[in-house]
Length: 153
Length: 241
Image (cartoon, rainbow over the protein chains, first blue to last red):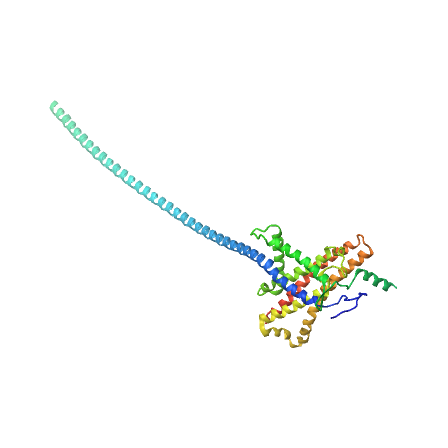
């Protein structure tokens, strides 16, 4: 046994090393096992379970978020294609109606021209007929006049 | 003259006197065991109450215990490293809790009101046997950690980075437990002595700041002891490249 006489102590002293040392060591080792089963393991289980739960939830949320973003992008492209498609259809319809309008206009013009021409021809023929009749009547009249003059003579 | 009166004063504080228990032909310091049983009993009761009903949403004591667990895990993880800290966390945590409870128990509970036939009750860590026991356990632990993790390659540590380090590294194996045990022992004993002397000389108000300082020192010493123990284990299991 190590024993120093310190500060007038009658026995022992501050540096009195004895069987307290190994027994204390055994006590601390026993305490380690007791605390491990009573404190470190159960608390660790709960904490790590919760940490796992939280990190799983975060991962899940991140996955969902990325899925949402993907869907959003998908929808945007769909919307874009739909818009261009609609624009195209509108353009096509406009061109179609324009074409139809022009065709109808041309048709109407032609018809109008044709009926005008026909009317002109008719007018011309009636005019010449009228002129013929008139010249015939003039002939008749001149013949009549001549005849009368001859008769009076 | 002055020296004599000082000796009498210290003698009145009963420094270096023990309550001896005789079992067969071995002698024990009874006051160390008495206080350590009371304090560890309180610690175990506290922990059993806190872990009785563990829930996913922690309440009350469970919160405190989880905070403590997290604190110890961070301490062990930063010093020992991600790979093996799990194996050593209970040991480091036990050292921390034991030293902390002993220091604070010794400082906070008015043990001196309980009269013993010889010696007096106080912090178990103010006894050199306790601190040497703890320090030797740390030494054994880091040897065991190094050998079980790296086998004979553990001894590469002694010649790392150059063989010149060999005598110093061997010397370190002796200075580590020595410094661990004497640092704790000296700090706690000095705190008890300072408070004791001040209370003896000026029993009013004046000792209170020193008592607060003592509480601070006690907590710091517990942290230092656990951190150094973890650091030594981490040093032993660290892989050199």
